[in-house]
Length: 435
Ligand SMILES: NC(=O)c1ccc[n+]([C@@H]2O[C@H](COP(=O)([O-])OP(=O)(O)OC[C@H]3O[C@@H](n4cnc5c(N)ncnc54)[C@H](O)[C@@H]3O)[C@@H](O)[C@H]2O)c1
Image (cartoon, rainbow, N blue to C red; front, side, top):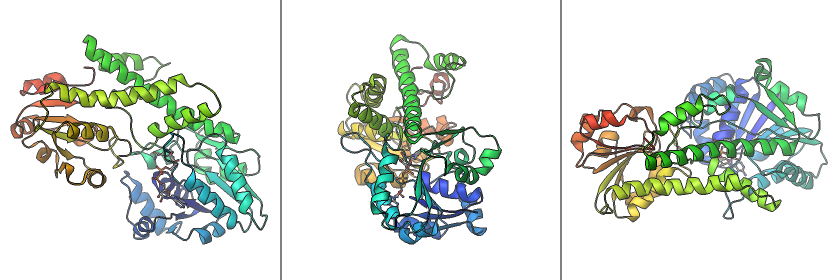
């Protein structure tokens, strides 16, 4: 059985730590965030992810999973070190690799025998080689080590499921030595015939960015089609449905909405554009995706403002859903941020409810908006209700009750989860996305 340290216990690191323990390794989750580690040591989840708590509890109980903030000794204990620290967007759009550089230095300083370092963070092309060089620089005892790029493709909200049932596992390495060990670490997946792609470091890094940028492009594309459908009077839902039936296109990621957000698509599209410009290569599709998504979020805010003929000041707008998508409390780069900020700028009063993201919202807006305890309180005395996140509990609202509590019955359904007719039947005025 391998001793695995996972450095960084965020969405990716924590999921990996729990998943790898579930695959049978001894795992130690490490993080600089002491508060997070104390929560985990107390058996509490720092993030909301369906099913994760149970699998964590089981692996802690069975003695395969622990957490610590003592990173040096954790590295020394481990045979394999997975790294899942954040690589956020820097001011110039590139990926900020400072956390990764610190981790690489710490690994180098603590190498006490041969180890495999597996980078799970999404990193620009060439970064794994850079990490190798940093580790080597601080590797005073001249221990042998290998670097593996093993990008993560999980979706927030389904993180645990995706880790345990991936569509594919990408393993990049510039030599063969670590490969057999990685196969053993992922043995349950390997035996289940999950496709494994073995490749070199740079190709593995590129696969992750190409995948995310393609998905972001698909979302931006269907959102543009939705805007055109709004203008020409066509129905984007039917357009997307018919497009998706074409096997070459596929139905996934063809759902119009308020624009992509979250911790990955925005930063990864910017990072790939930054990498391309560094290599004097034009990525006009990716650039267009970035611009299109940013315009789309503004378009959504403007649609609400324009419906009030610009008399939005003093109007009360209820926002249902703040997280960038359902089943997560993550609000990083969520469309709700741009939209609420624009509404506030125009002088509107904003009342919000999200089943999971309220704490994160309070950190962002403090007393600038009103926080409701549920969707029905959020719409009380509102002039409009705006659905931004497709939480299941918003799919089946008691519309009669909702409208009874509102001043005016304007209903903006930017996830297209209602039919125009069902809203109009109970006296509401409906705006969807391209419907
Ligand atoms: N969130 C996703 O859905 C997702 C999916 C695939 C890939 N990724 C990629 O995985 C990486 C991590 O993303 P995330 O969403 O898990 O980030 P996150 O911000 O949720 O977690 C990062 C964690 O790393 C810790 N950390 C930072 N510096 C550290 C250090 N020096 N030592 C130890 N711990 C440190 C932080 O305290 C934090 O807990 C990013 O590169 C991201 O692009 C994310």
